[in-house]
Amino acid sequence: MAMALKLYELCGTDASRVFSPFCWRIRMALIIKGLDFESVPWRFTETERLAFAAHDKVPVLVDGDRAVPESWDIVQYLDATRPSTPSLLRGNPAPYLFVAAWNDTVLQPGVAKLIVSDIPALLGDMERPYFVESREKRFGMPLAQVTEGREEKLPAFRATLQPLRQALKGRDFLGGDKPDYADCIVFGSFMWARSVSPLRLLAEDDALHAWRERMLDLSDGAARRAPCFGG
Amino acid sequence: MAMALKLYELCGTDASRVFSPFCWRIRMALIIKGLDFESVPWRFTETERLAFAAHDKVPVLVDGDRAVPESWDIVQYLDATRPSTPSLLRGNPAPYLFVAAWNDTVLQPGVAKLIVSDIPALLGDMERPYFVESREKRFGMPLAQVTEGREEKLPAFRATLQPLRQALKGRDFLGGDKPDYADCIVFGSFMWARSVSPLRLLAEDDALHAWRERMLDLSDGAARRAPCFGG
Image (cartoon, rainbow over all chains, first blue to last red):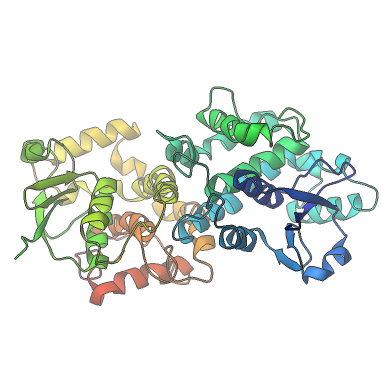
């Protein structure tokens, strides 16, 4: 019998509340593929625990005696080694890299500016100082100041999502009639926010809200059952 | 012997100066595929001339007695009917739609605001009033006002191109080691600008400039030979 896959995922004091956008990409990939996995909680600063993978960040997938770090490598590994599951990079992987590039340079930084101050409360005493210090350095200001007046910043944030709305016109998923890795990438950013913040990023009448609902519904609502603040 | 393909393309008084971003997508697709084609000049307001295709916009591809309008349909048609040429939508076409969605909602409107006032001078007396009136209505102001102080707007425009730079890290083309339709889509917006405006959209030390040079070099510099103002 095959050993279950293990996925090292970022969490804070609550091991069931996974909140890295990159971990969520892979979690959702596993959900879509219908592959069982064991979640291994990992916290900021626990770099030693990833030494076996010669890496210092999550996600790390462990498949028997094989360790695969980096979300992009993990999804390719899963497509290659689980050919009977739905393929997530269908055909040339290059255009998926543009989706990731847009996500990483526009969507994810945009989400961060709205929710980053919600994260310290979820962290333990060991990792909170690391997180606050490194993020305040990145933003050049206290985290509470980054997200100050965030309700008023929502319209500008929502305007940056126009490429997603345009791409979803006439189809259910970025992948077309079925979700694929393009959906996983973007959904990861939204699940990150949903897992840490009560802020409602999407208006209910937004076509993207309907898309996110479809993603939450996949595999009997697997992502919907994850701990969240209703955001 | 097969009849040469015909491509109805947008131009002004100079039939060799094609300046629709959508026409350039297909022109570049044909160049990459190595398919000969005859360019049929078409001007704004000549809707009657496209009646045979039951359409009112270019590009329209004519392949023998078959007329194919709409760039997205044309590239799929070319991939399907010319299987011995390089495929431009490799695998699932859906992620290419996200590239097009970003292009059409971010890049193309951004380019338009920088170059739209250069276009009327290229148009004949028949179509100039139509163009100016419809675009001034769209922008809600005179076209000269839209592009006023455009040199100062370049840094903000260039900042919006970050997803492209990120996607091109470590690879020559958006398509990977070879150009594909993702490259054609984005290149079309740049060729539109280059064909109508002296404004230099890209700094010479920008990685995107190097990518555009690679695109201009394809097929012995086919796109480079198109009339331009050096932009």
